[in-house]
Image 1 (cartoon, rainbow, N blue to C red):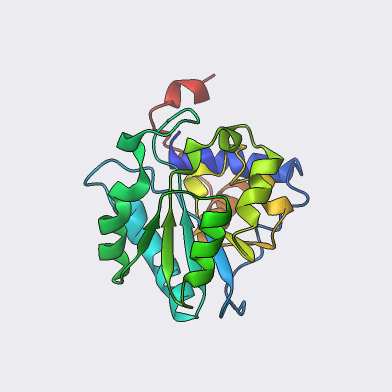
Image 2 (image 1 turned 90 degrees about the vertical axis):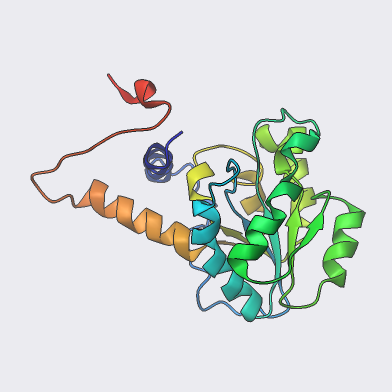
Length: 220
């Protein structure tokens, strides 16, 4: 789904109050994160050579790191249908993220369980961990609460910078916020503010250009 379509769908859901318990519109800016385990949901579902979303999210990663947080990066990649697929491992993103952020990042071939919790505890404040593809787990696309609880065990708070994926009712987007204090990342908040102005107080005359791979689903 195109970013514009995803944003429009997300705003519709906000207006329908389907996320009454989702405090996503609280900004992480100003929050004291030193020593905190911050689970940062990003959208790095990108083909080789297309690093635009990584570049846009890098300032958030650097900001959290410089504030002394333990930054835990969580993303999906492709459609592995709840099974491990080496071709869709997020390990392949590691060098690209490191280059954009400008610091060493460690990779962990899991995202839930005791091994993950121990690895997170060993990270120094300011360190960054990249978790394995969250869609390797069936509970992710089922929006499974038990899986979301396991994700929550690794962190103290949750920050959403995956605006382009937030139309999906998946565990790392929806169920997880029931179990952790949850905040909007700076980039996410900017996207919502921009779309809110367009939908609530549009300037006239107004022209809307719709695009994306699934544009046919948006036409009457």
